[in-house]
Amino acid sequence: MGCFKPKGGTGDDHEEDKLRKQINKRIDEELKKEKQVYRATHRLLLLGAGESGKSTIVKQMRILHVNGFSADERKNKIEDIKKNIRDAILTITGAMATLNPPVLLENPDNQFRVDYMQDVASQKNFEYPYEFYEHTEILWKDKGVQNCYERSNEYQLIDCAQYFLDRVHIVKQPDYTPTEQVGYSRNCKLTLN
Image 1 (cartoon, one colour):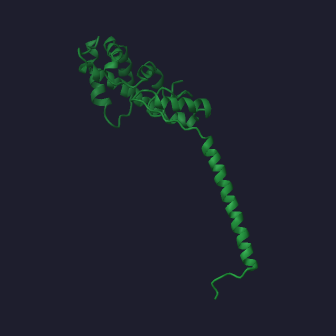
Image 2: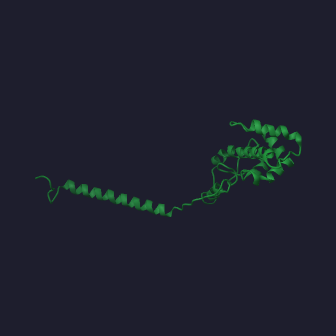
Image 3: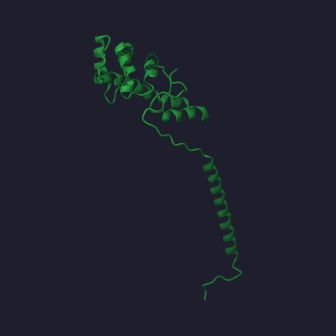
């Protein structure tokens, strides 16, 4: 017999129904707001080969539309910038012997610098001592290294190589801090002061 609720119900049932309706209304309103935010969100799928500039576009959008990067974020990018310099000089000096025809150093006395790059600077936990920057600057000025750079279409070189190699004298400063621009370095990029 007690399978059905009496028609009039109790006051508690009426309050529960009222509370359920309020909760349901709040949930519906929240879902409606989330749906509006979702529809207003622009999504962009960037496709492209390696070194084609996909991450650069995202970073430039951040600079233009999200007020750029904080001082802490810029400070955190110093290691990425140093790694870009190392990767660039390692790649160029490593490619010199593998290109056909091979590229020779203009100054053969710089060979020990190339050896340093390939043997010491290539180590995983490299600390970037001052001599690294000195070797890099001297190698970058060598016409043979420049000729190899000019042939970078024959091997894969990070797109920001020239930018950072031209600015080693800035990055090696103990008080160096990157500027706001973030479009040049790999791994979340920054440019130089």
